[in-house]
Image 1 (cartoon, one colour):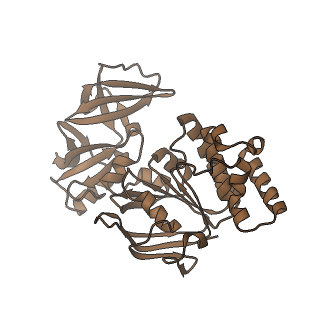
Image 2 (cartoon, rainbow, N blue to C red):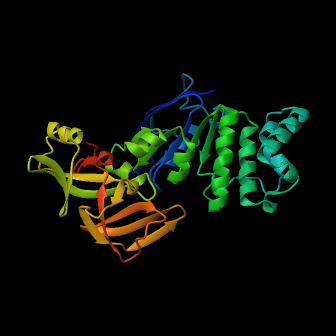
Image 3 (cartoon, one colour):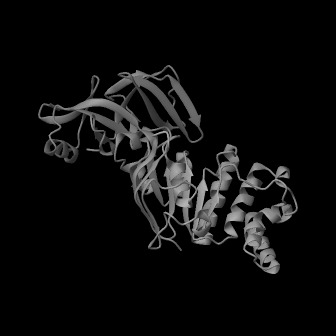
Length: 361
């Protein structure tokens, strides 16, 4: 097993671009850690530094108490699964999976045993004689994973392994990877821009933006307690509704004011804002679509612009005070596109952020 520590790691390219900035993270044995963020945020570069495929410009990488900065990638006891599968086209599935063991002079009998075990685990037993060009995308991805598994590494590194698959196959392969993680009991580090993959696979998620860590948390913590506006707006499908507003007293009771709409604050939240001196200050209010309710006496009124049926629920979209709003309602709701609706918030579920620093209040 492997414990990994990244201490103040940077990646600076020759053209002056700093792709990763002051990266600090501890990864424990058997964790499934996801690096997630938009394109260009530094997640794949960080993974490649861990693998030894990119040189660390500054800082240190430690694995099991040993500094790995100058250790070649082949000596780090890691296996990497790439986005493009990286299979040898002239080799059979069997030979692709067996290749690393042949290089290490593993006895043929042992190679055969391990390849057949992995092929059975991944549902590849019937295609061991085929070449990569004869395989589907899902089969190629399983071959790439099989090649990693037979090495029995301390750490599995996966760089957007499902991005080339269609939606149905991605869902299936997510389940396969999750099952493999449970069976192998190894440390997994996985890069994706797809937050659904991140939220369903990871035990720990690292959200990145512009080469910097924004938050490290469990999927639930990330969803329920985003630390800043970027995380709040990035995590969730659709993302959290974010409104510019203010905290104002009305008849002795603190309210959140968004446009002309007023929402009374729970006393505990009001006390927190008083203590931090946000009275009559501009703030950003966040709330997820499932925490907004249709209500005849709702404080916010607008016309439904988009109606999305998604099985057992519907998303209604409208604009209020220049802000796009998404509301999740049951599928049997009679509201349709062009209808005027009024909504209210579950005020126990709101998220408050400093408008200028972007940090959670």
